[in-house]
Length: 425
Image 1 (cartoon, helix red, strand yellow):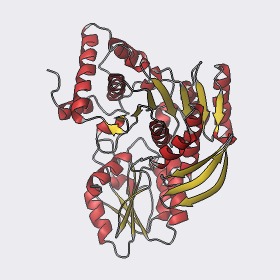
Image 2 (cartoon, rainbow, N blue to C red):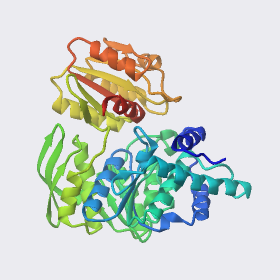
Image 3 (tube, rainbow, N blue to C red):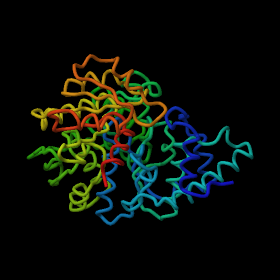
Image 4 (cartoon, one colour):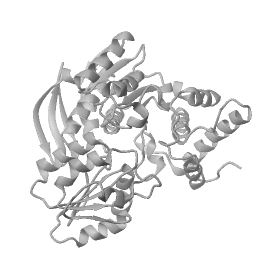
């Protein structure tokens, strides 16, 4: 019996297993499934975005800019913070729960038919299923352009069935080494797989060895590439809540980026380059980026005490967070609440973040693969470290701490999602 409701649908998806642990890198399964659904991913143009950090916020800025230009847009991102509906958006709005359930029934029915016919080796994974759902929903909604974030890697990610009009690669760093390899050149080679013959490319700032890999792939496929290094950044001013600057290449574009952190300047430049490549009017670029929302990343969600959220789930993200705190909160007494998943470089991340914390509370999101707080505590020697079984207990402990005027919740995006559910009305 097909699931009848939204909650039945998400429970079935969760029953397929953790989307990272059960990931099957390769395009055979998703290609067969999409063919059964009529290849919906071929019915709209695609901006495909890969990278290690910043790809979600870059996607959000590109989508907002296109929408400001009057384009009927779609946005596909992962993971979600609170509800899976966040992953599938049209015209700036998440898919409704009833529509989520409906499109799930269509994808699941196709998968079951293929299984019965022996055309699939197994039911599509969580991520493959949601990817197919997104593409099917976008086609039914007659979108013009979908901005699609890669889930894991690039060439073998389920989203890489698309033939993009534009491929964007944000800065590449270490993450998911178990899947992508332990070298930056190996990771870059995998992510370069989203560059396709007949499309165009945009590259954000990269380390030299990564830049070489990406440009070699682009040259091999005759993909013309625009780099953010071609843009001069003028009159840059960084604020606690974002930045303003002028991006100048062929013409000056005044950017007001509402996403906090110096690293977002590079992401905004990548969005500008992408939007210019797509011939978006300057006013739409300016207005669209200024209107971007991307929750859970350096997001202040409460005052007295101030509570800041940030999904710094890998070393590069932790370094960006540390830089932001040093710039804007160096005089504040910070209580850091940290929780993470087992597949992350938690020891390295804690080495970066723990010196910032006046008090450190180690906890865990409500996920099976979360690291136990006690195990995190064993990784470091902090004079005021404690553990809490869950986020609610961690927040209570933080609020009881004397003299604290900033609570920072970071680590897993799932922990950040739990915090937003508790703290954001």
